[in-house]
Amino acid sequence: MASRLPDDEPPGLPPEWGGFVVPDDISELDSEIEQLRRELDVPGRPHLQRIFRTRRWQQYGLSGPLVLVVLLVVLFFASLVFLLVPVPPRAAESRPLAHPTASPGTVGALLPDLALPVGTSGAVRLRNLRPAVVVLVPTGCHCQKLVDDVIASTSAARLQVLFVGTNGDPRLPSTAPVQRVRAATDAEDRLSLIYAAASGPTAVFVRADGTVTRILHDVTPGADIHQEIDALAG
Image (tube, rainbow, N blue to C red; front, side, top):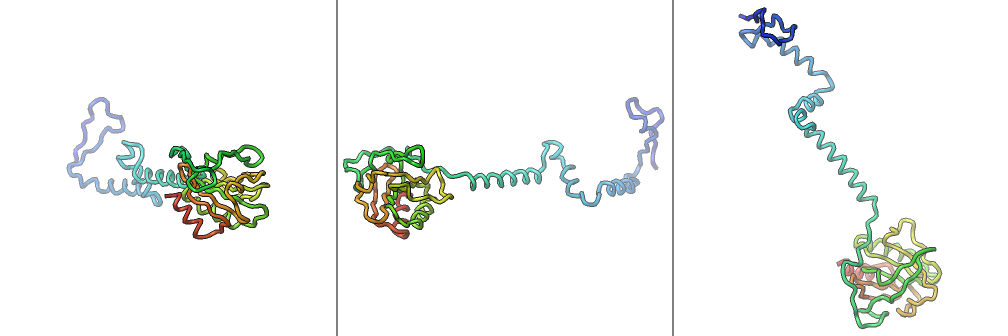
């Protein structure tokens, strides 16, 4: 038996609540509850309703699924930045410059204390290249395959690479990372005299402390150069 609120309901209740019926048995409201469910369950929006009707959304402003979506978007853009931004070479200051007694041009010595022009402006000081691979390229050398191999092989270890020619050769591929790979000009051919360069390319491998570990004459793409690069990376 439902009971009705008295007409003199307490002050402060909205006028439209006048005559509100309070059922004696809650089951008498089943029809009204079912109608309310049908109105809420609009086709195409059940998942959104569950998200936005959660207590977490009301208390904290964001629900779990929405936070997950935001994190995935952030991770996607972070991956793009990691892939597109060029990786800088390893810092030469990571280890102090050694002070060997051997003269430049031999294994265990430093590179010559020379500054070679790079491009139309600027220069590179050889002893700042560490760890690095310096490749002396003779005039008229058809060694583009070697150039590509050295650039690719030193990428993972972030070694600096300097190709040195007498007349601006070799030309670096457009995809070469400019922060790590450069081409310098030695118009007087001083490095070739110091390292007794042969008719083919000469590769000089330099550790992080500036000392030369290996000098390869008439070097070609292959296992020898990869082995020396792996040693520098370690």
